[in-house]
Length: 444
Image (cartoon, rainbow, N blue to C red; front, side):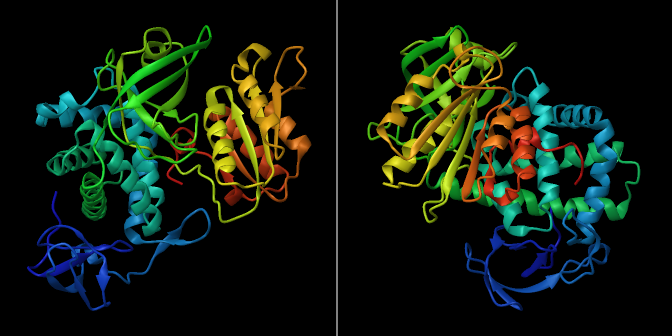
C-alpha cells in the first residue's frame, strides 16, 4: 500500500497534508507552491495526484449532514460504507480472515475473542470517514487512535498489511467497487496510515506505550461495584474527565476503558470505579478477583470531556452508575483551580443502593458552597428525585449559562442529549466521551 510519486515531489490528497516521499512524513510548513519536510528537511515542489483525475482543487460533489460539499474521494468512500453497513459483520470477519491468513504473526496482537474488536474496526472506519473533509478533526481523531494502538504493539510496518486486508474486504462486499473507488480508498488509507504513524512516533518520544500499575486498594462498595486505586510504575499525566484502557493479568490483550475518578493527585495514585457486568471478563476480574498487589496495565489517557477554565459558565454534570467517577474528578478540578462557578450534579441510578458514591458527593457538597448534588433514582423511596434522569434534567432547565458534561451508559447519554437539545441547549455545549458506542451505523 504505497502512494506513488515522482522523486522529490509531494503527492497531495484533497484536504490532507502532503506526504514526503523521502521520509514518508506529513509536510506541515511552507508556501503553497514549495514545501519543506520538517523531518528530513528535504524541499519539494508540490503537485496534484493525477490518479483518477483527483487534484487539490477538484470540484466537490454531494454534501455532508450540515450541507458542506464533499470531495470526490469522500463521496466514493461514503458510498462504499453505505454498501458495507448491511453486511458489516461478514465484511469484518473477512477482513480479519485475510489479515491472519496472510500475516499469521499479527494474530498474537489480538485477543482470543474478537467480537468487540470487530465492532470497533467498523466504528473507527465510519468515524474517520465522517471526518474526511475536515482535516483538523481527522488528524485529531487519528492521532488519538494511533496513540491508543501503541499499547497493542502496533508498528509502522503493520499498516500495509491492514490496508491490504481492508481493501480485500471492501472489494468483496461493496456492490459498486471499481477502479475509481479503489483509487480513492488507496489515497485515503495512505493518508490515514501516515497520520497515525507520525502521531505514534511523536508520542513515543514523550510517553511509554503502556504503564504497569499495582493495585494498592480495592473497596467493594456493592456486590458488583468496586473502587480500585492503583500506583503506576512511572508518571502518568492526565486531565480530570479523561479515561484510560486497562488490561488485567487474567485476560491478556483484552482492554476496557475506565474513567479516572479523581483529578490528578500529588501522590500520583489513580482511582477507578468498576461495575461488574454480565459476561464482562475484565470488569468481573477487577471487581471479584483483583486484590492489592496485583498488577494491571494501562494505556495512555484519552478523552476530551475536560473543563475549559477560560470560561465562567456553570457546569451541569450528569453521571449515571459508575459514570459518577469522571464527574467527581471534574468537581475536584473546579475546586483545585479556585473557580466559584456553579456546578450542578445529577447522580442517577436505578435504586438508592446503587448510589454507591453518594456519601462522597454529599461531603463535597458540604465543602464547596458552589456545588449542588441531586441524587435521582428511577425506583425506590429515598429522599432524592424520582423518575428518569432526563426528566429531572429537563424539569430543572433550561440551563442557559451552563455547559453539560455527561457520563454513563450509552442509552442514558442518548436520552439526556435529546432532553437537553429539546430545552434549547446547543450541541456544542454538550460534552461526552461515548462517541464510538453512540455513533450510528450509517455513513453519515
